[in-house]
Amino acid sequence: MNSDAVDGAERVPHGSTDDPALLDFSANTNPRTPDGVEDAYRDALERSRTYPPDDYPAYRRAAAAYVDCSPDQVVPTPGGLAAIRLTIETTVSAGDPVLVPYPSFGEYAREVRLQGADAEYVPYDRILETDPADYALVVVCNPNNPTGDAYDGDRLLAYADRCRAADTPLLVDEAFLGFTDRDSLAGRPGVVAARSLTKLFGLPGLRAGFAVATGSARERLEIARRAWTLGTPAADVGVHCMDATEFVAETRKRVRDERARMRASLADRFDVHLSDAPFLLLDVGERDVEEVVRRARERGVAVRDATTFRGLDSHVRVAVRVPAENDRLLDVLEDV
Image (cartoon, rainbow, N blue to C red; front, top):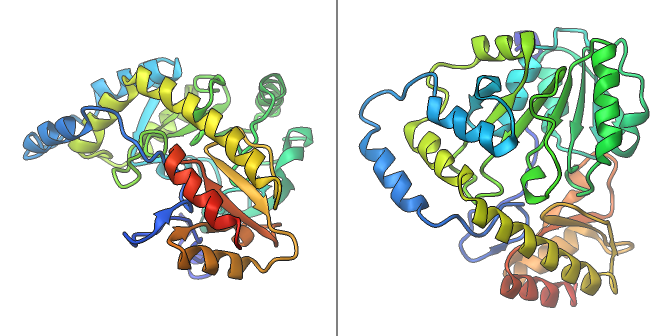
């Protein structure tokens, strides 16, 4: 991190609420967790009186099986954002140009700026058309947040090959890819895949994730990561969750079915973006976004003001939760 760049940086707004009176549709996390999570956490807490093994062998094996890569390509991190920061810290220097998609996750540009580098914005749906040469790094979010659409697999692979030929690392944020049946780019040469366990498994406060890279990129990530980067509870619960294949399959089906149902209902009042993710982006048109958010909160529902994303000025984002909760959201949005 460039110390001179910190003074000019700012925090990035995010969704989620800690108000227990609100049903939270502003954060894109699974409202369910795999069976056995509490027992796994309790057992890990008993073993937290000593340091965890810094090489995290069980966690690496579970992550490798989860995304179909080699265990030695996995770099444990406390959440997907930590994997993104670690990648940018070990790749980008002050003054470097970095291709960043928009509208997309605001932390990409912030992390680039914290390095003293320059974020060059490209529309997310055109980034695969760009020439990666002469850039220190290209960032892609798949599926993209907040729009929710995933890239065509063949086009993304072809672009990854172009990046490798140009000797430009490609950082692919796959935080929501687990909600789909699409293949990960984990283990592909020239690519760093950043994964989060906290969204699919409904544990955002646990802070567990990992990066996957090969060659010198993996070596740099491994050297630069903090010692004991995961607490024992996060590591052990992460192993438990990544083995919950039936839970993942059930979640994918529920999200797919509920997303389609919600989109059909909401399309009568809003322009609803197509999505492959556990959320939907709504264009509220002439309505005032702040008023939509406020009126929803008055009825006990939190939705995300998406105008904080670069390039959006009339949008809110809503998560896909379980059927009864989704019904409540649909009822609330009928009156805003």
